[in-house]
Length: 308
Ligand SMILES: [Zn+2]
Image 1: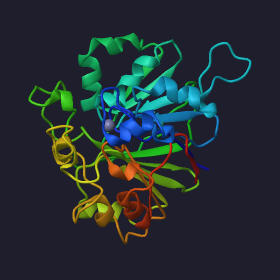
Image 2: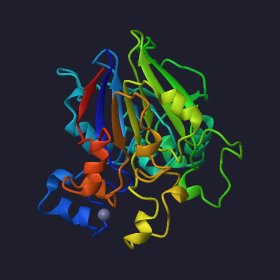
Image 3: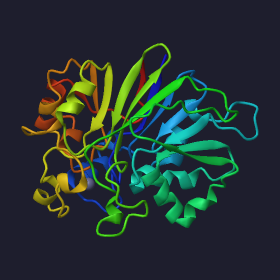
Image 4: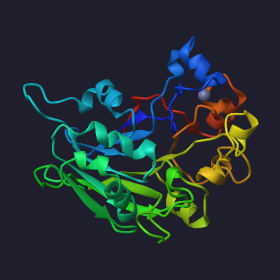
C-alpha cells in the first residue's frame, strides 16, 4: 500500500500570495477561502507510520499542523513521523521548509548533488546539524530506498530521472554552486512500494518529450506541473515579465501543453500540482477548470489523500 497526502498544491507564493491582488488571490482572501492553498509538497508512506516529504515548502509548518498523519506520536515528548525529505529541485518553494525542521529530530535529506551544493553554499542550512540530519546524494536513473531514522528499510523505492527544466530562479545569471553539469536541477520521481504500486511526481517540467510520454504511459497516478494555464499568463495579467517556459514550467493548455501532451496515455489519475495563483483553472466555475476536468485532470485541495 502506498499512501500519498497532498500537503500543498500551489506554486511559489501560495494562494493568496502576500503581495498579490489578482482575482484568485482576492477571492481567496474574501468570499472563497476554499481557494487558499499552500506551496507544493506531498507526503508519502508505505506503512502509514513513517512518512517522506517530497520537497519542503515554506508553508511546511502550517502543512504539518494541518495533517494528523504527520503529528508526533501520542505519549512521546519529541517525535515526528517524518523520516526524510526528497528534494526534486533547489527552488525556494522546495527547500525553504527545511529551516522549519531544525529542532533536532533525525531525518535524511535526499537530493541530487546539484541541489545539495546549493544547501552547502547557503550556510543557513547548517542549522540542520549533520549529526541528526544526514544529506544523502541521489543519482539520476538510480533507484534508491529511503531509510527510516533507525536505518531500517522504508519499503519505498524511488527512481529519480531528469526532466526538462531550469536551475533555481535565484541562480539565474549566476554561477551554480554545483557547476555546469546539465542534469540534476529538475528531477521527476517514480515512487513505488514492494507490492508494485507506484506513481509519478513531476511538479516542475518544462516540456513533454517522447521519452517522458512512454515513461508515464499506463501509470496509475501522476502529479504534474500545473503552474500556468497559458505560457504568457503572468505577462497578459500584468503580474510579471516571465513566461512559464522562462521559469521552466509547461502550460496546461495549448498544443504543447500538459493536457494535450499527456492525453491518450492511459493514465488512471492525473493531478495537477504547483498551480500558480494566476492560473484561472484554480477557479471552480472557470471555463479553464471545466476544460481541465473534462480532460480527466484534478486540481486538488490541500490535504487530499490518495491510497494506491
Ligand atoms: Zn494572485
